[in-house]
Length: 84
Image (cartoon, rainbow, N blue to C red; front, side, top):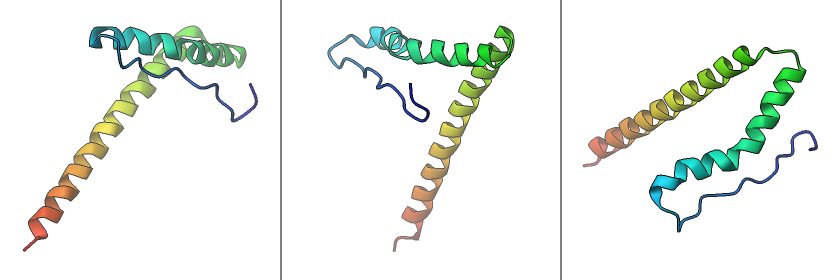
């Protein structure tokens, strides 16, 4: 894969049952995930370091999304409060 280029991911199947979405998402991400892990290993990182780093990144991603959503909510609330 060329640097900066990413293979397209398969999106969710809108027809599938909601209970299958997590598994379908994992399947869609698996190849990219395995490629990332392999690149990290080739760079010299240990498996446990990679796993902990990926968990930390996922946690920080969710915390950032939650913080951004809260900021958006507060901005919208402030704008509504300013209306005459």
